[in-house]
Image (cartoon, rainbow, N blue to C red; front, side):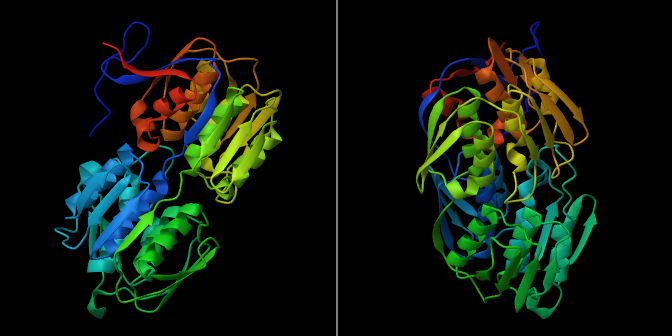
Length: 439
């Protein structure tokens, strides 16, 4: 499904023949919202099912464009899929080919995740270089170095990454791998590839994100031997084969953080159901620092009691630091804070495009490279704005909820990649928001 349709604009600057979100701001929100399964976790785990030559069932799978694209990639490889609600059944017993189609891979960076499992399972893989949001270089060199350390021969030609295990019966061999940067994707790729490698693999300076732990838990549910996930050293003892499993995906901490910011920016009390509070430690700490109270009601629920919005400084860092995927949403919130805030983006070099769009709504944001100075203003005003990437689109929605007047958010193909029915969930909380198409 290609949501990036050709379009024109009318005299008001509104996109024609493409859906937009029309938001009438200043509505008070109240109630409870159910958080969906984690997109970033689900994508990696869907790829990891290739490790098992049997049947797997995944639960709590969100209904997203990126999930659909990963499903199409798996189907192109011969995987049989059946979906019912948030359940996804996968039969990977008969893989038909080793190369994923470029037209899908080019739209989904997570498509590269199939490389490690294909190498582990079959000893061969061919994957076009991936695409996704234009928020930075995000090279796959760390993935490739890790696979090479495990014994794969890897080369890139005509935009296609080809990998093969020569000799040793097509089996990868355990090795020590040091990552120059704690890349989530590289950690996941190496961990998946090592599950059935001969011997022990040790990944040092590994990423520590909850999605890493979720992938490790999934692999363990299939019989993998993994320890140390959640720390900077992960050890994988290769096993001969993996077996069927039935596994629930963790809640999406980025969606949860987005709804917490929705409560803060609209001065609304909101309850989140189906969350893991410890995954949100950095976000909760910042919200409390700027004036909100977060009440953890139990292991799956928390509530925001908003207060005045005070300025603060934010620096994005790998987990457990402040997440880059919440930076844009906080920029929207800090645009109406009392005082001046500084935001430093250290993870992706091109992730400040939303600043200019927020300025169209009356914000006072000065961007330079990966740094933004945010001078708080008394209020935002509705305007037509364009999403520049997935999380920027969420930030513009949040700003529209708080702004006076009407905001038109364009570029919903970004938003639909990572938020399941966000306008429906916001409407249930009392937001005046609707998806419309202008002709």
